Amino acid sequence: MSLVPMLVTLESAKQHLLVDHDHDDALISSKVEEASGIVLDYLKLSSVPAAWEGGTGSSGGSGVPPLIQSATLLMVGELYKNREASGVNVLSEGAKALLHRQRDPAMA
Picture 1 (cartoon, rainbow, N blue to C red):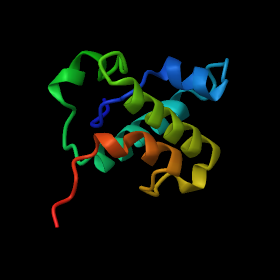
Picture 2: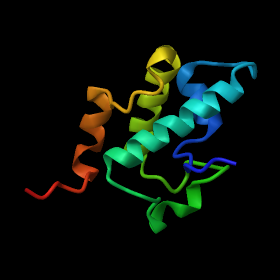
Picture 3: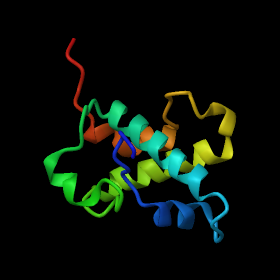
């Protein structure tokens, strides 16, 4: 079982990636988990907020705000396309733009 909650469903990730077969389901699920972890880390969240709880876990997605889902899908696409970069904890500029207002600001 995943330690990181999935912020989007496998089905929504496959739709975003335009994948219509089941051959890559395990790979795509791992990319969803990686992307979810990266997004949560960028937002400085150690766990999923209670307001999102209804849509996380194995079902994924429905309680997660749409902007967070969109950023996660952007990351899934990047991680799926560039598999060698999977271990890198870096958000794309598009994902950062979506998440920036949701991020807890750093204290100086």
